[in-house]
Length: 114
Image (tube, rainbow, N blue to C red; front, side, top):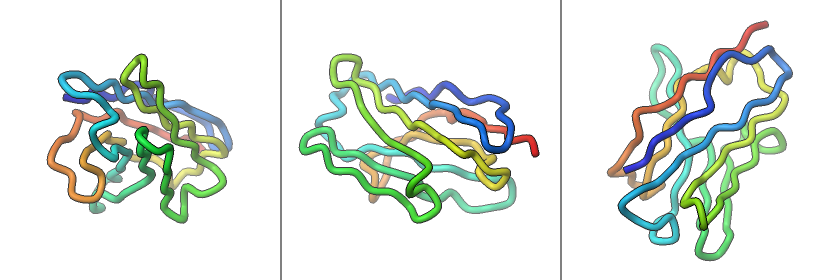
């Protein structure tokens, strides 16, 4: 399973770091990443990482503002969010395998104040 944390309220332009702690498997086994779902909208991909080869992917809105990283020793994936915008407000989920996700965490909510 995966469990997200780190969500909360952040002012527009601020920063926040989300964590996804995995248990029962190694994050090396899958491409794993972040998704988000805003109220009334479909869940969308944000960013992924392959800890096996270090490869990363970002959706266009995340490029230049978000950074995904991992700590194999902690079996954890992070999402550093900088220059947060009002439209980034959503519930953020960790999911895997990233491109056809079968497993999700419960999510962590990010609120952005203008």
